Structures are given as C-alpha cells and as structure tokens.
Image 1 (cartoon, rainbow, N blue to C red):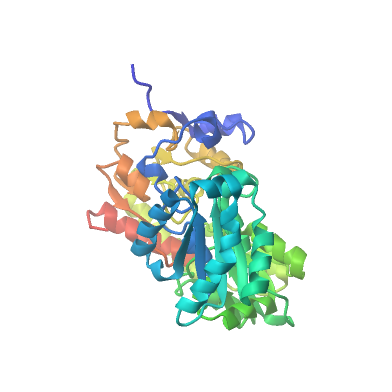
Image 2 (tube, rainbow, N blue to C red):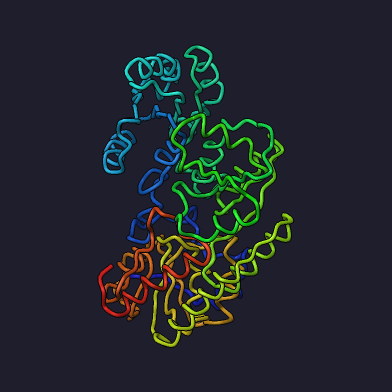
Length: 431
C-alpha cells in the first residue's frame, strides 16, 4: 500500500520543539520530492532569484559560470526566461578538468575575453562555481584575487552549492554576503540607511519609507534599485542597516565586523498589532520617533471589515509566497479564518510562530512538501482560498492568491494589499 502523504498537526509539531523536527521536513534525511511545493527549492538556481540572478543585483556586473555542461544548460534556459542572458557567460568544464582542476587556470583568460566582448565594459565580474568545485575543494577566493590583479577589474567569488542547502551557510544566505562584499566604509551620513534582505525593491507605496523620512532619514538605499557601481559604493555611508529578511543576517553581520556598520532587524509580519509593536521597538532602539498611528488605524479597519465579511472561511497557506507561512497562518486565524493546512518546510527559526499557531489553531495540519510521500497526495483540504503557488496546486478547488510579486510587500501596506487580493479571490474574482 502506498504511504500516505506525511503530515502532522501543528500542535504536535510545537510539542516536539525546535530540536526535534520530523525527518520528513529535513532534506538531508531523504530524497527530495520535486513537487509544486518545492519548485523554488530544487536548486539554488532553479527558479526566481537563485544564486545567479541574485548575484547580478550588483550593478554593472556580469557573471562567469564555471560548470559542467548540465549546469550550464539549465542556466541558459533560466537566464533567457528571466532576462539576464546577456550578462551570463560560461566556462565549461571537461572531464579532464574534473580530475586535474585545469579549468581554474582558464578563468583569467575567460574574463579578459568577456571584457573585450562587452559594450559597455562591465566593472565587476562575478565568478560562480558549482558543487563540482565544492567537492574538489577549490579555493575560489585565491583564483579571483589572481584574476583581478591580471584583468584590472573587480572579480567576486560566488558559489552555487546545492549540496550546502542545509548547511551553516545555505546558498541564498551566502549569496547575500557576496552581494555586499564590495562595500567599503565611507564617512557616515546619519540620515542614511540601507535596506537589506530582498533582491527586488520594496513596494514604494509601503509606509516604511514615509516613517523613516519623518524620523529624519532622508536616504534609504536598496542595492536592487541601484543602476551604477558608483551608487552601490554609496552603501558604505549608511548610518546603519535594516535587515528585512533573516537570510540577510550573515551579510549584515559581515558588514558589522568588517566595516563597523551596525544593523537592526525588522521581520515581515501580517498581524497589525505585531507590526505596530515592532515599529515601536525599532524606534526606541535606535532613538528616533515613529508615528505609525494613521497606518495602524487603516490596517485595523481593513482587518475588521475583512473579518466581518469572511469569518469562518478556510484558507490554505504555502511557502511559495512573500511571507513566513506560519506567521501568516497565525495572522489569518486571528481574523477568524480557518487554516486547515500549511504546506511548508520547517526550520528551527520558525518555532515561535509554530507555537503561536498551535495555541490558536492546534488542528492545522502541516504537510512536508519535500517528502517523497507527497507523491501520493491526492486529496484536497477543501479550502475556500489558498495563498502561494504551491498551496494552490495542492488545493485545486480553491481560489488562489500567488502573493509572490517582485514588488516586495512589507508592513501595514503589505497586510492591506494581501487582504484586498484575498477578498477578490474569496468573491470568485481572478488573480
């Protein structure tokens, strides 16, 4: 008999604690099922902002991908679909390279060829290697230093190591450190802050910009919005960094240690009271005033109206959306919605949200989308709506809100926009 798709109640998951995550949620413990729930998880370069596209956020840069044919073939398709094919170059490894490492000696010549072929000439060349070189123990930093001395252009090492997904420095965390590796400390401007965490800019309608301006912060930098390397260099003048995604924490810590640049973290939340509390703690911590009352009132009114209209509606939540699925599920339950299922991987850092969800909705079931048992998933949780592409695939009868726009939602505006889209979905409108 086929094994049933693995799932567990959030109450049981919370009881087990952060140190006892079931093996079905841990990729190192089994094969990974390539389901809709894992479309963004198979390879660091498989979908959306993988390592290659993410690194090219550095302005005026190109990438040299050093890899076997198979990795390059995949990258050729993705770079064309995602619009960065003209910035991606290839140095293919032969079978003898796999044994001798001779491909490394070809990198400076390949960079020189890139510089002679490009118009305009790039100011940064990112050299990206793959799991093959990880297994060979390649010292890419040394190789890049030598290439930089020879070619007279910034050469930045980058790593597309899928086998380190669950390691101490997962690829999408390590790549954020790479992105900021060229930042050098400038004279500090007290009215300047860097936003770190996302590979695309925050939605410009978000209140965070207005709140920072009202507090005297006139310059809010986002590397994803910069078009020149000169603008990028200006990141070094920031008074402090605002980390908006936990995967950017190591990058911020590197800047703190290397340049003495402090940082503060703000989480992306969907509960108006928690958003308010976080803003007030932030303001107190950095010694500025933030009057978010008008935004809080609007968010509360939106939540009250939504709750009155859709109390008792059921919404499934996936991980392929601009949210922490467990925090989002908590927020939805607080509005009177029923969350029958969450389709998501589980990490230790999510356990505070898991505990909160277990207290409010202990019967919610958590499905391990990466578990091979999900091949037998054939049911539908009967949700009225779903959030995330993966949840929509697992609940085909639901009205789906993808919630994965590249204009990054944040704060009260993100909450209001999400409820607006969810309202349209629950009313039977197309999204």
